[in-house]
Length: 116
Image (cartoon, rainbow, N blue to C red; front, side, top):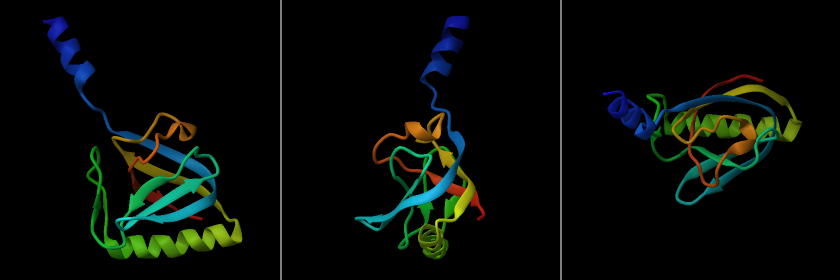
């Protein structure tokens, strides 16, 4: 029985939540219709939303509407241009790593919360 339980847990995918800090180093648009973000504490940009459709990622029930994505894009561009400290940005989803400098290439996350 313990072997079966261990097998189930070893194959299960657990969603991650991570807060990353720093300034906005990159904001990008990638076809088709995805916004990317890289903070100074992150090793690579991450897909965070779409200005054209409701953004959902595996491993979290949080979503981002297209309108919210457009507002977030404007806020992130302002933060980049003023070099504002973003404080903490909460990322959720299956692609979220254990630390901010370990994002894989082309990963997706939902931004749950930030203020600056």
